[in-house]
Amino acid sequence: MRLVPYYTLGDHQGPLLDCPMPLDLSDLLDGGPWEVELGYGKGKFLLQQALAHPERRFLGVEVVSKYQKLLSKRAQRWGASNLMNIRGEALYLLSSVLPRRFADRLHVYFPDPWPKARHHRRRLFDPETVDLVLGVLKPGAELCFATDFLDYGELVMEMLDGFPGLTVEPVLEPWPDGARTNYEAKYMEEGRPIIRCVARLSERADQQALHPAGARGIAAAWHRREES
Ligand SMILES: C[S@@+](CC[C@H](N)C(=O)[O-])C[C@H]1O[C@@H](n2cnc3c(N)ncnc32)[C@H](O)[C@@H]1O
Image 1: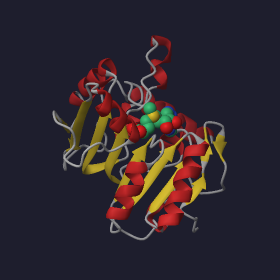
Image 2: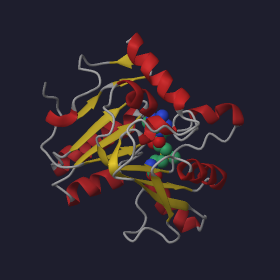
Image 3: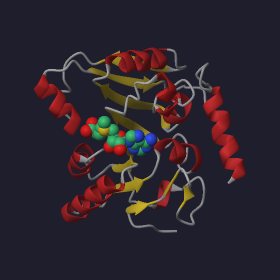
Image 4: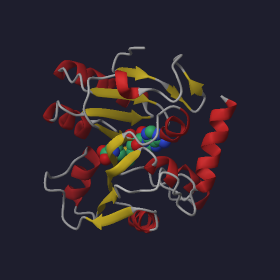
């Protein structure tokens, strides 16, 4: 199977393409490590990184189709053949479509904070989803995270701190390369405090290790797979 790098794969209603699940990424773009960004918005960071690092492969996931089309157009215009861009709901794709443990780096910047308690379960990082999200990381790989929503950021840091085999380093200054995304640039200009961190998974991370609170998310993912 060979797919063009920019396509709509699926959403919470199910896959739109007839492709193996979980998707075998090995063939899709030329070789090199994978970096993944979830909820890339206008995709500025992802495109910049893809152009700056042709030896690496980049996978973006975004639920809003107008953003996916925007990034696809820009990536084609700039000839970024190392960037794959999927429209879909991140948790659905992580649970039912994407392989586990393939990414060398995961980027999550300014994910929707869903501040109302009854919406917390929609968060990308929640006790029930943390295993799914971190499940894309290879041993030794890292997560880069930022948010301006401080309550959520503190919860995420706490959750990451308790994750088996993960070492969390708060990043107290802006990234050395400056604002990475549109939201970050805007919030820095406004002077809003931002929580940033880099979390690295140990090379010896146990394949079976689950965050104590994440087991339900994994169970739900497997249940969905069995149903599909
Ligand atoms: C607040 S914006 C941040 C955009 C970008 N990361 C930035 O920092 O400029 C959150 C983005 O995540 C996307 N998003 C939210 N929930 C998502 C989900 N479950 N799956 C995929 N994308 C999602 C939204 O459509 C939006 O583009």
